[in-house]
Length: 158
Image (cartoon, rainbow, N blue to C red; front, top):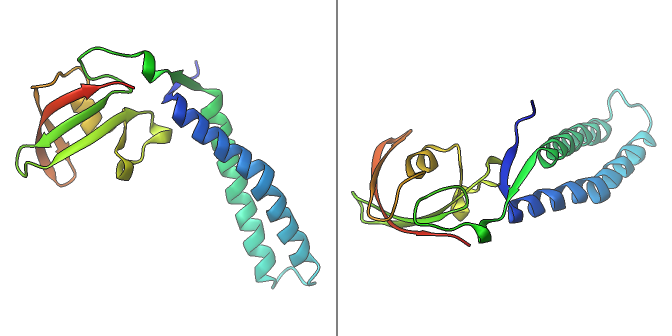
């Protein structure tokens, strides 16, 4: 059984664009760099060649990873979701009960998580604590820096 990878439509598009860029732009450039480095002679002490081969290995590894995630993607259309409980795709506004700081998180699939931009993985401690809760609920989140307590102010979709 192949595990599905949940993601939003925007997350799928972003991964697909990265895959195309790596295949159609990065791959030919790296091949060109390898050919140039080869033309410089002795490969055993050719740092350019070894750097280009390493870049090729990293690029090909990421291509394989992207192809795997995209093939197992379960795209969830957030615009069709609704309700007042937190679930995948929800954008949740919370307030830290210690600092009174408001934060917004959208719960997304692991491949598209980007904490700096407010997108947290469904598997993250904050998302796991929020799932199934409603506005007005308080959640306790265990973080590497200790426990945090948040009150949910708003749950939105789309």
